[in-house]
Amino acid sequence: MDYIKQRVLTLADYICEQNATVRDAAKRFGVSKSTVHKDVSERLEQINPYIFKKVRKVLDKNKAERHIRGGRATKQKFEEMKKRSLK
Image (cartoon, rainbow, N blue to C red; front, side):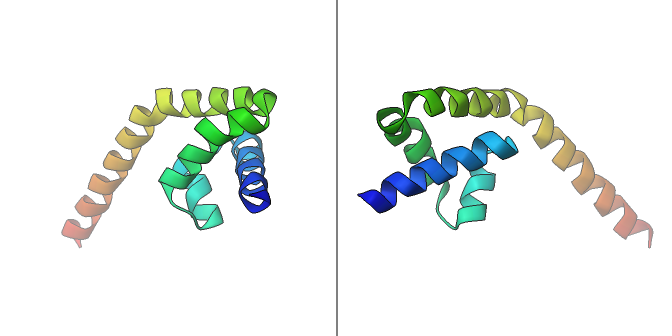
């Protein structure tokens, strides 16, 4: 159980310090997105409610902005495809 508690706190710190998404944190620590989400949305609230509120703010902000990131990624994808077809 101590391992899980440490992982939860490490993920929470990373998300807060880097304004990271769940996907970013999962990739950085080599765990699944589901694990990160469960850790920071369920387990963290029990371990440290103060940090939970900080992480929740970051994740809510990321969720509100995800359509913008998705649009940028799509735009970049099509620009790359256009460059390749012109060569």
